[in-house]
Amino acid sequence: MNNNKTGASARAVLTMALALTAAAIGLAQPAAAAEKVRIAMVVKSLGNGFFDAAHEGAKEAAKELGDVDIIYTGPTTPTAEGQIEIINSLISQKVDAIVVSANDANALVPIAKRAAQRGIKVISFDSGIARAGRLMQLNPSNAELIGVKQIQMASEAIGGAGEVAILSATAQATNQNIWIGEMKKALAKPEFSKIRLVATVYGDDQSDKSYREALGLLRSHPNLKAIIAPTTVGINAAGKAVVDEKLVGKVYVTGLGLPSEMAGHVKSGAVKSFAIWNPIDLGYAATFAAYQFVKGKNQGKDGETVAVGRMGSIKLDASGEAALAPPFTYDAGNVDKFAKIF
Ligand code: RAM
Image 1: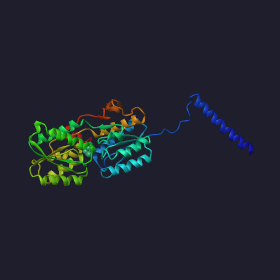
Image 2: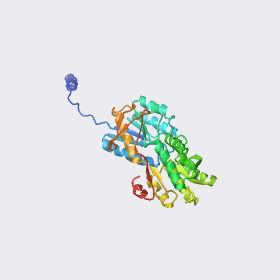
Image 3: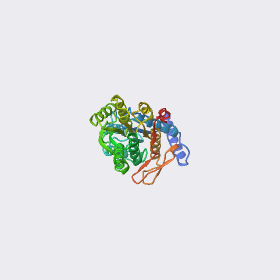
């Protein structure tokens, strides 16, 4: 028995010595099961087709990278509180990166900082967190372009003159608020001097609330010529409200929409044209970028180049932000073709 014990401990010492020698001379250790990089995509809210498409892009990036698991999550309604709770639990799960579309730029900073302290790489996409809370913000496109484009589409639909109203997402949404600011700047230009913004309302990216807000606009502004919705949920609801109120041809809806959700509204005549970028590409690029941070290839400094797979690379500006492609315009001529994609 004594001998056995001695034998066992001698073997243990020998095994350890061999392992140490192997390590010292650089021989490979027995392969540990490869740990996957866990990237959590936290969206404004679940059930939004735009984010479902971004999720498709995230999955595509994960497949291409090979060693990534995607955790797709978000609150049921687009609130900062809901996202804070989720991020808290992602910190406990020790994910490697969080890619978030923020419901509030500032409210998420403390929890994002806590995640960063635990070594989690936090980046925002679509709707940004304030700089103190993230390593980078990936914008779908240039904000000024997005603002001007929507005013141009409204102007074309209504013959360059008349009352317009904005139906937005939540009042705190970083992205929509930036775009509304750009729309107001565009409206101040001489070419749009005959267009008057009479109201800005918030449907909170909920179909029913957006629909009610659209009805409210139509009823309280009898001379309204256009509703501009810089949200895929809002524009869809506004299109339905115009049809239900039998105002097709009198009030036009435009803004940012998904071809798959808007094709019917283009056919009904409620919408002449709308715009959007590719949400699949956005989710793909954001996931790919997060991976670069996890692998230590990027730190988020001004001027850094971040690889985004099949989309090439993006360069961070002085605010740690980068943008993808210009928005694309859809109308009766092309909407059906793209409706099959997103
Ligand atoms: C909604 C969301 C999202 C925005 C799009 C255009 O789906 O608010 O953040 O980018 O619209």
